Image 1: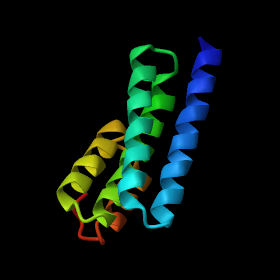
Image 2: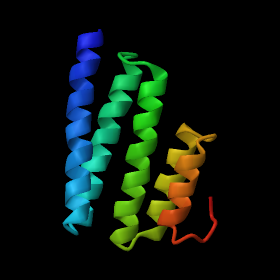
Image 3: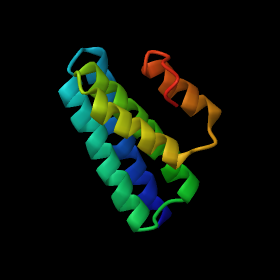
Image 4: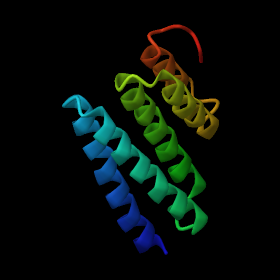
Length: 111
């Protein structure tokens, strides 16, 4: 149902915005939790096939990218790298996403 997807995306967007605000405030653990919740809701939306694949993949990629940033800021480089790899799996040909992942890795060229 398109109305259901629109409502679900609104909640997901709110969680994503919350994660970004918390990250900016230095509350990295809480930011990671908000991004994880947005990812869980995206997974449920994808399972229900309530939204287009491209809409969901793009949002997954952004959520995983920002989750990786919050995890790295919290000192967990291993989990951060895993999140960035998941972001790139969602949109492997997205050059901008790859460039942002590299930048977040301090430009070490891992992606």
